[in-house]
Image (cartoon, rainbow, N blue to C red; front, side):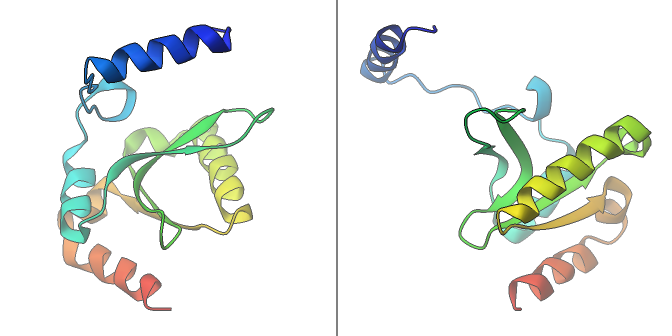
Length: 129
């Protein structure tokens, strides 16, 4: 797949077959319930892919919920985000996004499940600024 001609041929073949990949959540799993509930309440898409550009690692970031038009990224974090290594990854992601004009909001799964309306209100407050 390193060859540009091969990639183009594959794209054309998949388009001709009307190929539609099955939507999946993070890491091939279904979208977690808290993330899905918040996205539905906002009417925003989940699992939004944002390319980082050539020469940058990683090559893209997956945003849990996002509005490209408003440049707002929402991350809904589970227990795995308490680990130091994961917090460092989150900090790099936040820095990258903020450096490109995005606003990043983080909510815990627990916060969304226990008080969805407060989370929606926090997002609405951010979008009205």
